[in-house]
Length: 171
Image (tube, rainbow, N blue to C red):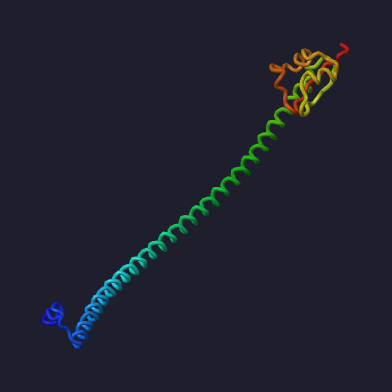
């Protein structure tokens, strides 16, 4: 305190100045040591927080990898199921077509084999893109004659593969 008063009064000596400088340096050093200590504490806290965040990121990445694996496995299962369903549908479609073809063939055999036809004519199997009008024109027979001879309820609904009796146009 005396030192401060002497300085304030302007009474300084060379030794006093050194003491004052040392005191200033000591004070400044202590202040800097306190700041360094506080900064070190903050750095340590930030490092702990960084480690905590790193752990959380790793946990999220692991969970994301598990979810991605589960989604991929589920998609593979769905893909296999879709393929199996497609194969089953194809097989069923083929069975239905075969069964219907056999039934139609039996019906046609019954009609032709029973002698129901007393008139002469031709058998025609409908091909892709043919219409009843085109068929009638090709045989030079009226459409109505073909409709009548085959008991067609809807002449516009003929299908590929259907066998039609075409009455002879000369009669």
